[in-house]
Image 1 (tube, rainbow, N blue to C red):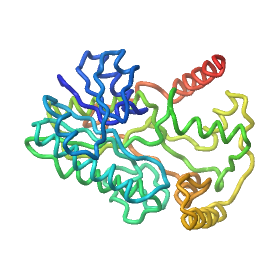
Image 2: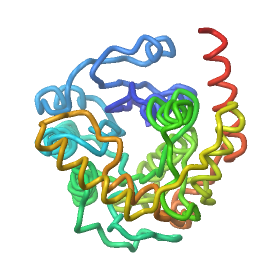
Image 3: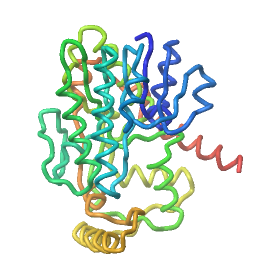
Image 4: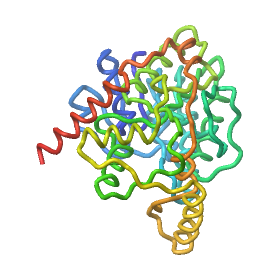
Length: 334
């Protein structure tokens, strides 16, 4: 890798990739919605723009040998046309930009949700088929985008997809802050029996997996056209992990419970009400969220270990310590 383009490079995962690339002294062009001074400070170049714009992507890909396509519209609520425009059409623009500029390698940030078919998954691997029933537009659009990425792999452009599960760490703008906010307000309820196991992925491990994939594509190329689950390598009990985090932050543990059928039913009602009202904010409960909170979903990383040489750099315990320290320090500064 000599010059690298990172779409969504200002986001949580994208910025971690940029930091690891710059640690190797690799030239980085970050494409995002804004200019990011903290990334420019470590030597990255930023361009503000939208992956929905094919001309913009064509320009950005010039002179680049590797693209990390991290940008996407995440979340479990919103309009289909928005998810489709960003996650599907945006991905088409990235692929077209790579083709026009002669980019050699394209690494896509996907999600295990592409195989989640509303049933528990225990130690699943990459032979699992794509889901064909969806309870949120995000998962459906990511399936479509990942298919495009992997189908694009050929002799001129090598591609692969990285599927990290529940990315967390210091600076996480989504998972940890939402858990802490709801925990402090006493708004969390254990959904189901509380025995479900899930994968989590520390952000630096996720970035490391992306760079390993890029190294493979630039070398032997055995990852070309393939997808890879990425995690800590060992699932956690979701509710025990949440309560451990809360204990370290002096937040009362989650004791209140709600059955899965009741949570799912509430999701149906809230989705219907929000849909009729035309509200864009995410409901407190949805059918997809009820399933994610009640069912097991963890995956084997054997393929990533074999093809990429992936091993987590940061253990779950180390990650927990770093998150707690980061959050405690941020409170002390307020």
